[in-house]
Amino acid sequence: MGNQKNAFWGFVIVMVGVLFLSALVDHRRSIERISYSAFLKRVERGDVAKVSISGQDVTGHFKNGTQFQTVVGQFTSDWSVLRAHGVEFSVENQAHQIHWWFLLPLLLLCGAMGGIVWFIIRQTRGSGGGQGGNVFMMGKSKARMYVPSAIKDTFASVAGAQEAKEELQDMVEFLKDPKKYERLGAKVTRGVLLVGEPGNGKTLLARAVAGEAHCTFLSISGSDFIEVFVGVGAARVRDLFAQARKHAPCIIFIDEIDAVGRHRGSGQGGGNDEREQTLNQLLTEMDGFQTGGGTVIVMAATNRADVLDKALLRPGRFDRRIEVPYPDLKSREQILTLHAQTVKMDPSVDLHKIARGTPGFSGADLANLINESALIASKTDRKTIIVDDLENARDKMMLGAERKSYMMTEEDRKITAYHEAGHALAILLRPTYTDPLHKVTIAPRGAALGVTHYIPEREKYSKTKEEFLASITLALGGRAAEELIFGQVTSGAYSDFKAATHEARSMVCRNGMSDLGCVVYGQQQGDFSYSQATAEKIDEQVHKIITTCYQDVCVLLRENKDKLDSLAHALLEKETLYAAEIYELLAITPRVDHRFNA
Image (cartoon, rainbow, N blue to C red):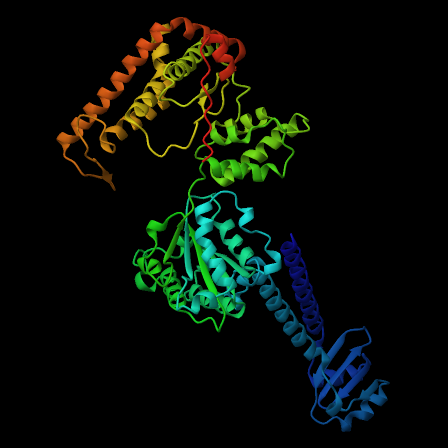
């Protein structure tokens, strides 16, 4: 808005100057130029009222008010003519006369041009967001500097990521007391690459290192180096490291370094590509750069370490790679506990159970889960956040918003109820190799007409063959229930088939759990590492596994049709049933809730 006002007033000033100059030009054009002989004739006729004589220039007014101008050679012999006809005249000293009317247009023009130049410079500086947008300071780094007193984050601010924090502790100790390492000749790495999916806390970890070491923190994105002008990126890299040396001890943090650190030779401009020049300068600066007696550590973050240039990852540059994975069960509980401190959580909420129900959630997802639950509680004017708010927030994040306006026919509701009941019974009747059931609902949410939730008891880093088969059986339970009750099938089981096929193919191609033996059949960049005949055998094994599991679940549901009917009718009545209600309804012994805190 401010730039628009500046543009408006700049335009007004320029237009006023142009109009003034136009009026001045028109004024000069209104003076009548006549010859000297015509001037004398008009004097003799008595038309001239007064004249002003300056050297050879004569200006004056006729009696009708019109201005005139003429030029003479020698005027002294004509004084008597002017006196005889009553013309008022004056003589000016030409040596002391300043022709302001001639200088004023030039001054106004210079002022207008200066104003335009000033306006362009100001607009250029303002439109770029700081010094990086100033065309005269384009080579300056766009890094944001945080002084030690402004950094409040420490390792206590980072829940989970215990292994990453332990590895980064070396950086902290080195920044605090470099002589501790130098006295034994040790060289602590000064380049640390944080690798992990978005939302897992890479930037937070970098700030925590600066907070723990109480040193200056320079933060910049990889894309901030690149401009359309050749050489600007390299200049910004030089300026960044110059600032870091000036404020050492210091941490340089480059977020999304893959924007500037990709393999060289991939750009359209070859070696002259601006991005590659920037990368070359970065490699040069990191290759044993001098810090003037201070300590500078370069930290970078990416989720695409595979595309980084090899020279960037060699020893002496980013030679320490720290993985920042998705949080495990214990870390998720710690993250939820940390963020729950900022909201009013009901004491009855079991965050351990919520953590079990959020496998695959990143730290940012868990923070958003707490915030979404607070928003849901606020809409209902509750004073605290309860379990239902967290459940609704999780379902919204995983499946989408509840579709309250979606009107299902009674037939569709019945099919959906039996479909979800089939999934639930596949869990309840095969409890050994499946995760505990949590709840079943037929309330439409997102693209799903219903969903069966189960909560893992613990983090699983490997799966047995029986667990793979149980997962496939669970996925096929919905279609089996439809066929058993209605004698027909619908298209609602597509996602179930997709999950079952993925599990079966994983058993055959990667885990050696089929008749094809302990061989990995891989595929890289569209090329298969096996023959067409082997591909046909893989398809046969996948089909065999899925067919066998489907037959098993059909038999299981047929033998327990009464339980299937009872659960489906209860879903039609209540829409959502939790595990405790289902255990009581079907007279099944509740599964023991095992907790693994390690």
